[in-house]
Structures are given as C-alpha cells and as structure tokens.
Image (cartoon, rainbow, N blue to C red; front, side):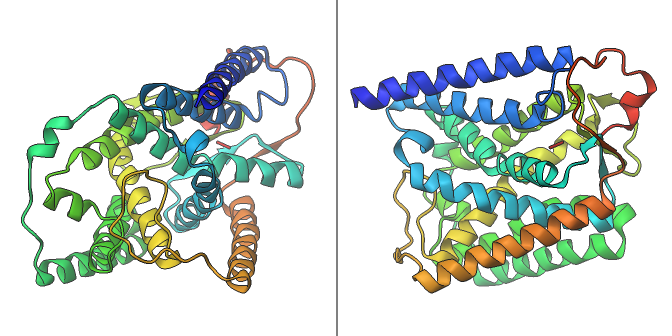
Length: 344
C-alpha cells in the first residue's frame, strides 16, 4: 500500500510536470510539443487525475487495475475511429497542420484517440470519489418492459441510419444511437448496465458520466484551441457563438457522448466475457479470457481497422500537412489561420 501511494504521488507529479512543460513549450512553438500538444496534455491529465483518485480512495484505474487500463487503450482507438469514419460522411470537422511524416502522423492518431475512454472514465471515477450526485442514488426506476427494450433498439438503429441519409439535419442523432441500441442488449444479457443501476436506485454513475462528458469536452476544446495541429468544425447551423473552436450549442453533445462510450465499452466487455474497468462488482457471470487464437485474430482485426481508418482520415479529413521544425513558431498571432486550423 505504501509503495502504491508513493507510486501514485510520483505519477501525479510526472503528470503535472508534463502538462506544465508542454504548455510552456507550446507557446514557445517548440517541437514536438507544438504538433503533439494534445497528446502531451491529455496523457498528463490522465496520469494526474488517476493519482488524485488513488489519494482519495486508495484505488485507481492505472495503479490498481492496470490490466483493465491497458485494455482501454486499443478499444479507445477503435471506438473513436468509428466516429471518424462516420465523419467521412457527416463532414462535421477536419484537421489542419497535421504532421506530414506518415509514421509520426499515425502514431499521433493512435496516441490521441487512445485518450478518449481513459479520459472520460478517469474523470467519471474522480467525480464518484468526490461524492458528486449522491442524491441520485435515492431515485429508483421500475424495470423496463420487453417492449420498451425492443423499441429502444429500433430507435438506436434509426438514429444510426438517419444521419447517413440526411446528414445535414440529423447528424446529432449519431451521438445517441449506440446508447439506445446497445444499452438494452447490455441489460438483457447480463452486462454492466445503466438501466440496472437505476433499478437499484444507483443513478450516480449516469449523472457523473454526463458531467464527465462536459468536463472532458471543455478540455478537448480548450487544449485544441491553442494547439498547432488541431481540428476545425463545419457543423451545419451552429457556426456562431463559439467557445474556443466549438459552437456553444455543440457542448450539449459531450454528455451523451460520454454515456455512449460507456455503453459501447460495456458491450465490448460483454462480448469478450470481461468485467470491465470498474472496481464495483458486475452481474456479468462469464469471465473467461479469450483463447490465444481469438486474441491473435482480434488484435489482427484491430490492426487492419487502424490502417484502414487512418488512411481514410488522411484522404478525407486532413486538409493540410506541415513538417515538424525546430525553433519557435508564432502561435499567439495566428491571425486568420486560426479559424482554419483543425487534434491529435
């Protein structure tokens, strides 16, 4: 326990140090911090928040459940790549000043997208540790009927298909589709389920997920705004009244996105027969590791998906490339270029 507490303090100190140094180097325009700032900032945030969680309750994802944390990393890339491929059709954002050297660029994609699930889940666990939304634990929901669950799945399918048919008007539905489609399946087949939590009067997790999505959304946009390599939004009807690069109304999408990530990962764990990243006991009775051949097939499939996804991003979503150069770049006087830059 003493060793883990020391490890937690060192980890938190490293996180804060990386964040401070990367901020200073960013505004000096020094590489690789200017081009890779998003990765430095988010991994620093994850390390720091995890150490705070351990200090609060003597248990955290990185320090106490390292194996589950490592599982989050590749699945985080997979899940975000799904939304990137959806964006090829939706065209709601694009990237600018992306590193032109392919190995470094694809490494940047991997490191950046790998932070999505850890960032959301670490923030959620921090809010849990702080005791936020405890009053939601007193609200109980009646068990959903089978008809309601079927209707929810049908709505999820509709929410997923409609944005592809009418992307200009129905693009927000994509951020709810997996919740309506997969949450009933998690409930039915004994996986971790928010519906089951509400049945027990445990609404705290849902509330903290929504709040975590908003917090992460703020930091996504805040750090993206100052970065050299970044994203720019082209969301229809919402191009005015921006906070950083994001239209203000766009922040309403972050809370449901956090819930969607949670539901998606619970479904993945259900299919794999794993209990997931949380310490709390799960109703999932199957807890068998995948066979060696299945793990090899899974990792091979992930690798192929990464290659295809990254190539699609390069071809369809990246609007400009730049070389990482030593020395200083003027990031504080970006002028009109600031409105055309889009992270990794």
